[in-house]
Image (cartoon, rainbow, N blue to C red; front, side, top):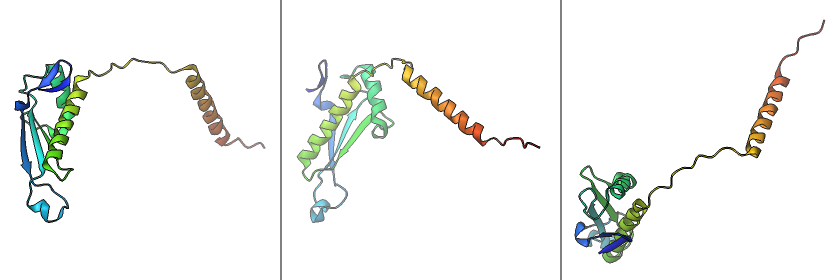
Length: 140
């Protein structure tokens, strides 16, 4: 079992990996060896995740989530297949850990006394500037 947070663990059988050729430079090796990893995790059908965590994970996944609710993580940073597998798994765990933490509710605050004073001082300075721009009536 892959532990995400205490109380939430993933069964490794829920994760499927496929190996593809990595893009970018790499010489002759890049055309022969499939070192990039595509990790797939069915987020919507996973029995391991509570509903709230699943909803937050779907929001955090963004473009990596397919229409069917499958999370696809592609790792091709490293030259070896094993390092890319570890990287993809670490990124999945990091995403699920972020989803497992409920968001901190916003506590409404009020502007401090100094902020109010600065705002009013700036308003009066701006008013003075505009007042000086006014054309004065000509005295005959």
